[in-house]
Every structure is written in structure tokens, then in C-alpha cells.
Length: 91
Image (cartoon, rainbow, N blue to C red; front, top):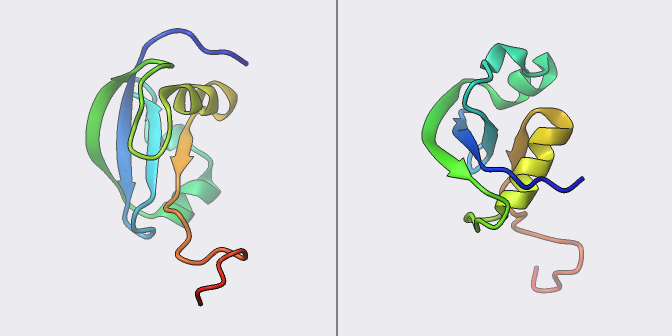
């Protein structure tokens, strides 16, 4: 699905998962999130509020990825890159 509109987004940091960020529409209450997701992330704290457009480049993703996740699931979850990947032979 192609998302073409700008959207105000609130970015939350997860207390239980360092480096994990949850992007949600600014007008959506967190109690509408799946209970299992809330349990996994723990307390959510507002990091920032931004206007996201499909062509906006964010730190680890694009605006299009965020907007598509929100369109599909109601939120976009950004997890930190793994310190070790199966193809990494340096460990």
C-alpha cells in the first residue's frame, strides 16, 4: 500500500527495550495498542512529535516505512539493529 499524506506522529521510547521506538499517530491513545505489545515494551515515554511524510528520511527508516506500518497495524515499531547477525564472522 502506498501512503502519500503527511501525518503528525508521536515517537515513544520503550522502558524495557533500549533503543526501541514506537511510532504512533499523535491522535491515537496508547491504550489502543495490543496488550502484548504494551507488556513487551513496558512504560512508554514521549521522545518527540514530528510530521512524517513518505519522503522523509528518519534515523533508521523512511517516512514511507513508518506510514505504511501505521496504515497496516496502527503503529510502527523500530527495533535496534542486532549486534550480531548470522552472517557476521567476526564473532
